[in-house]
Figure 1 (cartoon, rainbow, N blue to C red):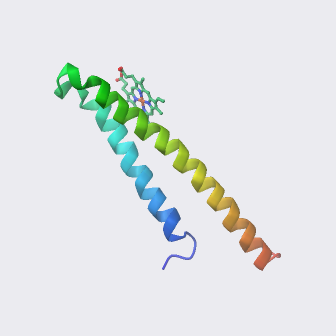
Figure 2: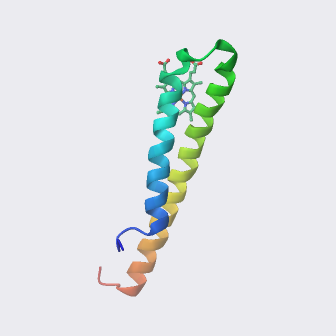
Length: 77
Ligand code: HEM
């Protein structure tokens, strides 16, 4: 098991990767869909983007919490 990153951090990392791919693909491929689907595609795009923002904030908070815990266990580092 990776000691530097928790399973949750790794899961969030790959989820963000997936969301970036979907957000980008939604915009790149929107021309392939009928115009009537545009609002739905835009909604997918914006939802992915906002989810990425929320997950990145979560990652930063998890990172700060883990660092604080590590410093408490080993104050010399
Ligand atoms: C990782 C996150 C995101 C990526 C990679 C991304 C990427 C893109 C790309 C490539 C386009 C097409 C630009 C063009 O060729 O005209 C686009 C358009 C757009 N994006 Fe994003 N975006 C992201 C997040 C967001 C978020 C969070 C919002 C809104 C809150 C947003 C709103 C829009 C809007 C309104 C458009 C124009 C759509 C249209 O032309 O109808 N995007 N984005």
